[in-house]
Image (cartoon, rainbow, N blue to C red; front, side, top):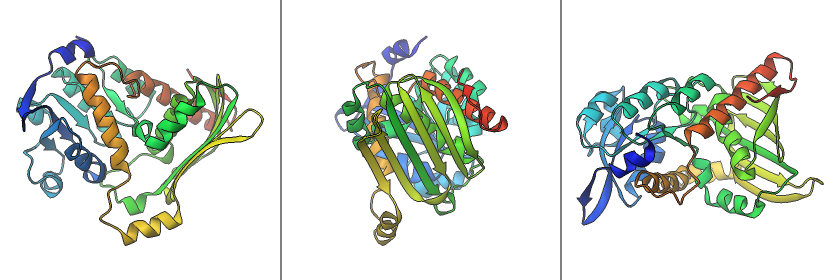
Amino acid sequence: MDQQETSALLRTHRAGGATAVRLGLVGCGRLAEFGYLPAIRSTAGFHLVGVTDVNPARCGAIAPDVPAYRTIQDLITAGSLDCLVISTPTRCHLSDARCATGAGLPTLLEKPPGVDVHEARALLGLIPSPWIAFNRRFEPSLMSLKSRLSKRKDLNLRLELHYRRASWRPFDMQDDALLDLGPHLIDLARWLTCGTIVQARASSLHDRRAEFDLDLDCGRATIICSTNSPYRELVVVKDGRGGEQHTHARGGLLAGVLARLRPTQENPLVTSLRGQLQAFGQAIRGDRTSTQLATAGDGVAVMSTIAAVRQSAMKGGSSCPVG
C-alpha cells in the first residue's frame, strides 16, 4: 500500500463540526514543547489525541490535557490515530518510523532522517515512507526567495545556521553540528535552486562546527553551521558574476536580547511548523497540489551529501562525489 492508497483509507472524525485529522506526537522534548505543540494547537484541521515520551513526566509537563502513553506502540495500539509526528532523538527515527509503517500510518519524521545514509535509505524502503520535516521550506521569506530564483543557473549561495545548544537545553542530543544543523542547510541548497548536489568539499569539520562547499548542477553553495554560537540564520544568493541578488537573515545578538525581554513571545519555529503541518494534512488527505513537503527521497539526498562531507574531511578536504 503506497501513501496515496493510505490517504484513501484515512480515518477522520468530527470535532467542533469540522473534519479533523487525529494526530499522535512521539517525543516530548524541547522541539515538541516550543514548536510542535503550539503549532498543532493553532493549525486548523488537526486534533492531538495522544503523546508519548521515554520520560513520562515530560508528557504531563507540556501536554497535561492530552492522553499519554508509555511507548509509540502503546500510542498506536490505542487505535485512535490517523497519523504521527515523530520528534525523537535521531538514533530512534528508523525504529519509530517502522512502528508507524507497520500500522499503516502516514508519518512526518523530524530531521535528520537517520544517523547515516544507510538509515535514510531504509526509510525510503518503508511503505508508506515517511515525509521528512525540513521545516525551513515553510519559512515565508524563504518561500518567497525560492519563487524569485525561478530555476536560475550559475547561482552562488551562502547558507548559515547557528545556535547555542546550551541555551536550548536539549534533554537528549548526541548529534554533531553537521548532523544537527547540516541537513536543514543542505536541503535548502537543493530546494531553493531545484538543483542536484554533485560533490562536496569539507573545509572544517568539528563536533560543534562544520564548514563545507557543495557543487550543484546549477551553481555552488557554501554552508556554515555551529552549535556554540548565538542564534542566527543567513541565506545569501548571488549570481554567477558575484552580484548579490537575495538575502534572508534572522537572529543575531540584538534579536537574542529582545527574545529575553519578551520570553512569552511565540517561538519563530511555530510559523514554519504550522505551514508544514498544513502541507502534511493536505498530503495525507490525498491532495498532491503541495510540492513543498520533503520526501524520504529528499532525506536520502541530504544524508548522501553528509556522507560525502565526512569522507572529504577524512581525505583532507578533497572533493568527494555525492552518491
